[in-house]
Image (tube, rainbow, N blue to C red; front, side, top):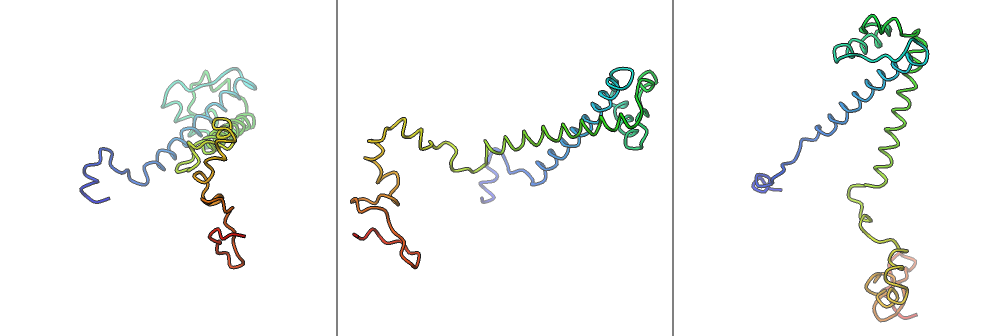
Length: 173
């Protein structure tokens, strides 16, 4: 693309690292929220009830406490007393992180299977769909147009490869 074309393009090309940065930030946020959910689940199952930070400062301090090995650090005192022991907290965090990883991987793989950029098959009918819509007789009538490599014009049959790998140009057999 020349400089003039790039200037006229209504949506200029993005820098290469922007998408990676957004994906990395999203993954970091997902990991942080999963850790906080793990703390909440630990409180609900093994402690005195559901525990959730009241604001961004509390959430940041709670995550910092988890990284420092002090699960109750940063939480308000009324929530910190309801928190179970570190083994239960870190076990529930591990389960929440594992569940988050599983769900994110499943979504990514499913999305990649059904939407591949540049996939030539997207938008094309399958054999069964073509047979159902056109019928066998119509497909046989236009086979030289649909697959000229298999059915060359003149009904000479498919092209055959010789021992060198070069295809025979449909010579009569």
